[in-house]
Image (cartoon, rainbow, N blue to C red; front, side, top):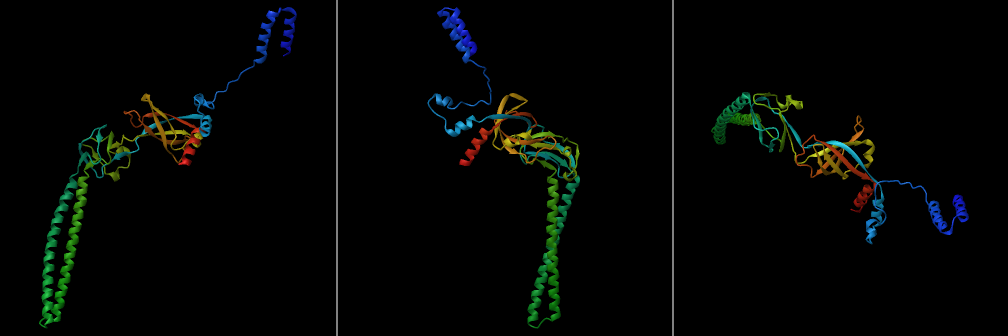
Length: 340
């Protein structure tokens, strides 16, 4: 300000009135100017915003929420098919037919491959023969029981008229009890033979390995001529015959840093893009949050449901995730949930 006053005095002394007015205007501009500092935070509409320009003021809660900062959390993950089944053979045998191909669609219950086990077929034939024998034995015992019952009835009638001794009556009753027990044992033998047939037939039927779920064959390691182990002897996945995945309901599992867990919640929305389809982003939403933190990686796994992903998406594809988080979104969702 002292410089301005001194300059003004010099102008009064040495310059004409016309130049004096122009210089005073310039000095006034310098005196009123100063340094400007700009701080850019997350963009949010100014109070009133576009609505104010059209004569409509925002509601108080909407204006407060829109003014709160938001930020993005990025991560990466993989496409996952939650419904996936690894197929084993329940019984051992030799593969005689493979009726599917990798990448093919299958329906639940469809035959995938067939095994041949001569021992299982012989067991079924033996069980059927044993059932026939048990049936014949039951028929014979049933006849013996009927005869014993008839004899006992006649003896009891004669004994009632004192025409039959007590000893003969007791013998008739013993014969009837013995025949009844023999018939009961024969019926149990028939029931056991039926169970043996059912067990043997189940083993033979299991030689046709069927699809446990509907889906797409994602892995096929079975070949005609291979000898496979039974399920109880095959404990490793690489000993399985094939794998089937339901490709109609895939999700993304993504890891985010433990430091961001306080901002994670089901319902949080964002966007994902696959490395295989970088020009086809799609919407995602957090459906589940893992209950455990990975000690090795210091991350928590999110399961994301997908909205209109690329139709050619496949399991194990790499996905890049971008989630929009912040107090604004949390406050709004929290208030809406409280109102409901």
